[in-house]
Length: 284
Image 1 (tube, rainbow, N blue to C red):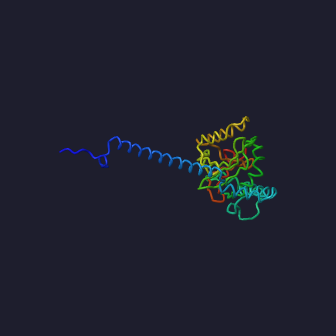
Image 2 (spheres, rainbow, N blue to C red):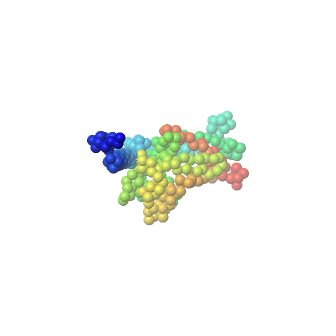
Image 3 (cartoon, one colour):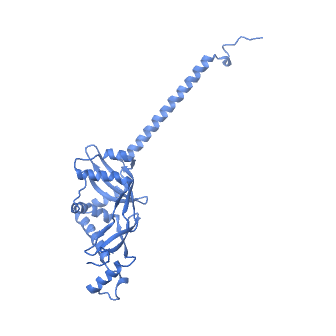
């Protein structure tokens, strides 16, 4: 016998009511999911803003070091570094001498020629500290660039180097009408003996916040000065690898070629080979 459904029985709820209940549950779920997404975006935005505003520890440390020194003390550190590098490149090691602590000019010349014309050349490693390098950059970089007929863009100040996670870091303050921010460039230098060195830029950070290359390019637009345009363009191209010849002349007959670079938390170990500037090893 068929029974008439009891409206008061929950199990006999009309289909339309059950459908409305389900739709209400879906709407509540969507609202909660949307609120969760908004909350996560707010948290991510807050973290990103904090990272953007935060100054890396190596920048804080280096700035404190430079500010703790007088200009004269920084000049002394920079000059000491230059003199030590020149001395280590031009000196004759004890194992290369003739057994006497005193060398005549002829003996020095003969020894240098024999060392730089050998198969291995005259290889030596020069250790420098980051403090020395940053002191040099603070007081000598602009003059050195001027000698190369170059200048830093007006927007770039306080250049410094650091080592972070076994990578070299070039940091600077970038100041323009739209932006005042510490920018860091993480990069590596690949060296192959006898070939050009390659710089590979691994990333850019504003404060502690990693930035995509496109964002960095927008934040650092080209300026009216063509020389400054070149600097910014080279910065962007460095993502694809910038090459240069790692060679510097020592004097009229010799040059130094960088063949190795090792990073330390507080400095760099640069391995160079002293070579003749002439094909046969001797000045014509």
